[in-house]
Image (tube, rainbow, N blue to C red; front, side, top):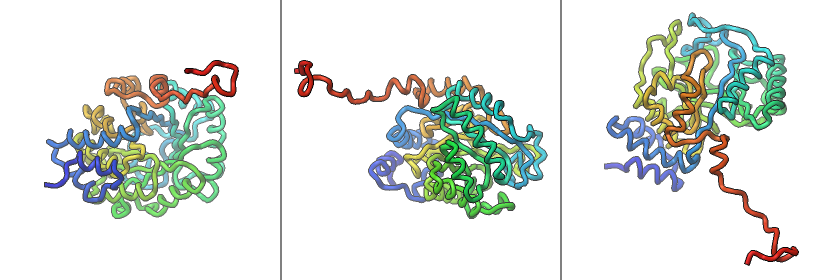
Length: 352
């Protein structure tokens, strides 16, 4: 009999990185072992993130009409999915949308646009939006997701106050060309590297349920670890009608939890975010998944609706967690050291 999942968690906490064999063992655990997997992965989650949940909010700046042919995407070239399609939001509308998410409890706003990548004029638009947003909400984190970056664009975003850049690898390199043909896996890695070089926090994740093998899921996770992705969004395929992946249903709630747990074992100290498709695929196991992941999107996604924001926040509270940056979370932080103002060197009697 091999080591238990609890022993694996202890080994990772002691400094031994999980191997690809460990990751496969987690992914292939019998459903009867699911809660043992969750309990073990939860040890890692709590060791690094305590009882906090980071809440993120998406603002879709430009929707649809993308020239790329990503087969999973409702906005892609060739998709006939009946989604909202519009050009760039105005600055005022962007601030209104972002403000709604922040009022709902989000601490990070993810500003996303469809397309292969931004023009320099697009960067001008985004930097103006970011400046206005940070003027109104100085503490907000901003993550931009604008597609493939050209030289110098990441630096301009950083200078404007953008904190992070999202560009998902989506799947394993060995599976990439089955999913999209209008850009390469290397193109995606190059953009993540550009973001890192500019000092932006790299945010890169995957989509599960694209016909990948277990080994390819493991391959993708270890690639994300190698890329030093600070935040790893784990999406679950939403098979939109009108896309090549319509009617593709490969995931069960238990498998989704095991994918998240595998991510936690492989990248124990990284933000693991339950992203698109969680309501559809995790269903009633969403609270269980929070025992493994430490981050979610609040409310709606790019082209699909999520559950009500208040339901998300209630789920967090009911699961015994607090929203990162909330009054409850700040109140539980350790107090700053009390600076001595009495005794030696003062005219005040010592505390003796």
